Image (cartoon, rainbow, N blue to C red; front, top):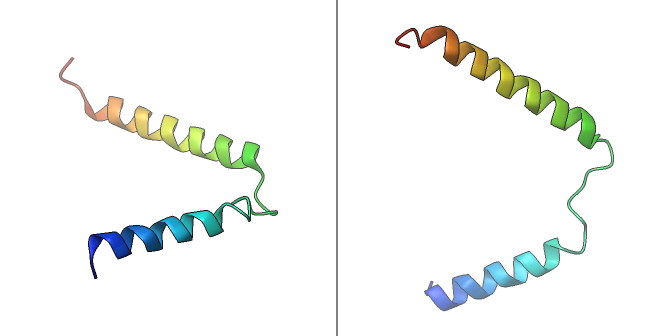
Length: 54
């Protein structure tokens, strides 16, 4: 497989994927964003608990 044919296949795949929108009907963006934010804040808290050098 050459680079040109691989790039052409990726362009075709990207063009087809844009038709569907990419959003799943059962996912609430605010709920997902809130869970991600809570997870990142938890990781930040854990990191600061282990970093006792400062």
